[in-house]
Image 1: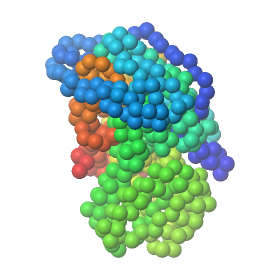
Image 2: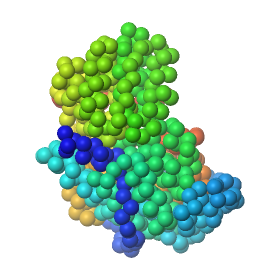
Image 3: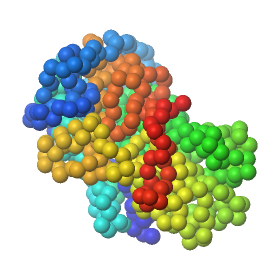
Image 4: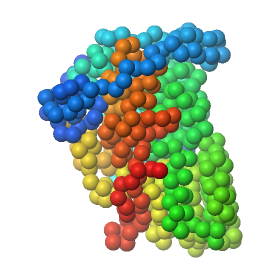
Amino acid sequence: MKRWATLLACAVLTAACGTTVPRTGLSSSAGGADGLGGAGLGGLGTVTTPVTSGVGAATPGAGTGTGIGTGVGSGTATVTAQGGTSTTLGTGSTQDATIAAQSGPSGTPIPAGGDIKVAFFYVDGGNQVLSSVFPGTSVSFGNGQDEAQSLVNYVNAHGGINGRDLKPYYIPIEATNSGNTALQEACLGAVEDDHPFVILSIFNVSEGLAACASQTHTLFLDVALGAGDNTIYNTAPNYLFTPTQISRDAEQQLILGLAHAEGRITPKTRIGILSESDDPMYGHVVTNSIEPLLKSWGIPYDAQSLENGADTSGMSSAVLKFKTTNVSAVVFSLGSGGIPEVLFMDAAAEQAFIPAYLMGDSTDTSFVGSSGSASEVERIWGAGTMPLANVATGQYATTPNEQACITLMNASFDAGYRDRGTSLTATLYCDLVDVFVAVGKAVQGPLDTASWVAAYRGFGTRYSPVTTFATDFSGAANYGASEYRELSWQAACACVTYTSPIRPIG
């Protein structure tokens, strides 16, 4: 159990970890690989016409790609911060007086020809921790620095963002230094040391990251297995974005809504709700979404809370309570990429408690389905928007955009990637950079946070994603996945697989 606790504490599998290790800025003029072509990585290609939108040499093609809008809101919005009010989006002051905002979203716009400072979070030591707990596992992290640098090289070799090169900084997030607070400190340290225009992260969104983005007026883009809840997005509405995910609230509304519509849960069903208390967002999802939905349908429930994802004693107690009160289906609001769910299922199997499990993206059904107790995983049903987290690689074909990402990585540093499952992080970085670049190229005129956000809001459904089925950036939501598929355990493949066509999220 000590090994489990270590893994859960570090929140490996793209969950929250943090450190404030000194860093150095890295910039490269090396060119990206030409000729990767294909459908490509959307925004990594030029947005002007006529060119292809794919990775590789920008060659004439049939795409129109006329660009998006004019970049409304070019930095004149008034921002009130603890240190005062500014008419140019936070110039000279932030909510945290210890953070010096230079050449970032709180500073002056970046002119054509100027460098854009981009901070990348990457996991350090994750594979060592994984192998110590799951010997022989096929799950692994890629080399985050190499993966991100290959994308930076490609972007800079193809004109950057309207003549502005990306200047990367790499922030190691130690797999053994975990927690919401630690990740917040890593974010604050990155802003103080490097003054980035944007932070790109592959770690689960947390309250601490949202607080850092809001306090420092720093654009923060995140693609991971776990998005934030609606409360978190509301605390940083102009800074925190998860463009290829849905919020944890939207995830529960999707799963529970489908379960209710299909008669999987009724007033005769008692639902067990399991959450954890080490980050407030997990409880927020329960009180703001799960409980109101169940109450509106007249469905009884029991809610139990763990101290954290490694609280095995709490899990055993929750299993006993659920079994005693005749719970027949369990829903989770937890972190750590499916690991607590596996622990819960192990505890349930020990007590001969076999409920239905209603699950989605944040519970990493692919990992749980291959790691949980056999009698328990056969009861998994749900819906998801992210193949990497939902199903084994063989259960969903590699898309052209995904293949272009993998091809670029292999050509750049001989990564040996076969598919999305070879590295848990490669395709996440592709979406992060692709979204940032595509939206940045759509900005007409000065590039600052306000103009980037305005271009993002105007992008609509034009972005072609790598890690999800489709996106829609319009409206007020800061999360963008717009389509889903139902999933469940199937005996034919002895795995979790998709069981419905791709559908729009209502």
